[in-house]
Length: 238
Image 1 (cartoon, rainbow, N blue to C red):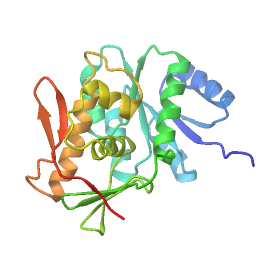
Image 2 (cartoon, one colour):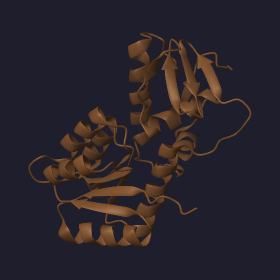
Image 3 (tube, helix red, strand yellow):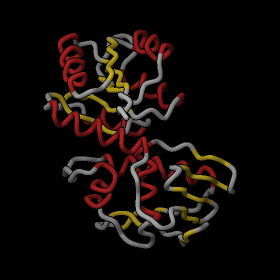
């Protein structure tokens, strides 16, 4: 059976970059839509469902951060940011408001392709390891096969793909200190850069969502010079 082509939306005001990415991703068997700004992006999203958005942060009129915030409020579609080399602050803000990963310009097409495929695998839910894939902790149940986090058995907690991967990393390794390198490899499949703050931002995002439903739970603690630790008692549940 022929595999369904995944739909990717590229939002970038640079015509050459749009054309380059469109041609490259099409050759890799993706269906690609191109938009130069937020209005064209909205028009595409009204016509079709997309599987991933590649979003440049430096856009005219409505900037990429505003678009990222708007997308994340409406959908869990994976967002891959394109940022300039010196835009560390914008990268941090983008990750904080819900982007899943980033690529720094100038970038190699193969690097971008690897990030795209990793995000799509996470969003689809890669086959994972048996036997039991449901973990209970505090008032939550994480179902790793369904890729869902439930609070009080009924309330679905909205998580992005990266946030869920982070949670899965913790619940399968409770009460173990995990370094930033270990977490970054688990979530993004790459080694840590000394200036890469994506792990810290991702942990902060997950903490806020857990604390909002279980105030003061302190389920994830920071270990000085060590990394992060899930403090809760975790057990497998049917």
